[in-house]
Amino acid sequence: MKKKLFKILKILIFSILALIIITFATLYFSLNEKLPEGKTGPEADNFALKIQEAVRHDKYVNTDYLQWTFRNKNHYLWNKKTNRVEVTIDNIMVKLDLANPKKSSVYKNGTITLGADTEKMIQNALDNFNNDSFWVVAPHKLFDEGVTRKLVTLKNGSKGLLVSYSAGGTTPGDSYLWKVDQNYLPTSYKMWVSIIPIGGIEATWEDWKTTKSGAYLSQKHKLLGFGIPISNLKAWNK
Image: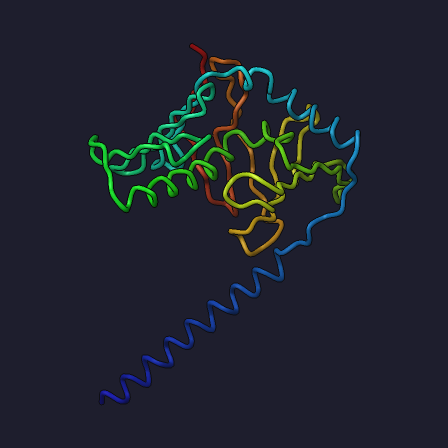
């Protein structure tokens, strides 16, 4: 009886694994896209400048504070002028020094924490900040150090901007193809990133908000039909 049950269980496990592999393979071959070709130069840079004008980049640069919650669980209060950010995840709060993460401090349930785990907590806060802040301020990072900008002709004949990051963040080497409306306001981007094995997955940029500092920020994204909520989004000056 036990051998028969084990055999049935083994068949069931292999069937589930086969189904997962077939599903992933189907998704990969139906959705995966190669990184598009594009052209660097003044036209690409001018396109990027028009995007930044649409999102009021000058106001963003002069913003003192940014605050938001990502996916209803990761909370951020970023002092852009001092380059420090309070990252709160569950009962852990990290006062993150972006210029020198080793100088960051960790608090657990409101009490400062020391020990071997603090380095991991700081790295986790930094990794989450790099990812979660990108979903808020990516259009303001088109001219960061190590960025390559290429103008791409899309399938419908319109233009898009391919932005590749060779340095910075947690996963250098990622690329994003921005699509914009007639006013150069971003509507979505396609991603070629290390954490997603399928290239060209598209995420929307919606529900744009004018903040107190004047910066124009997106509060809503959708990826494969699933929402990526950004709540409590605020930007202000002293």
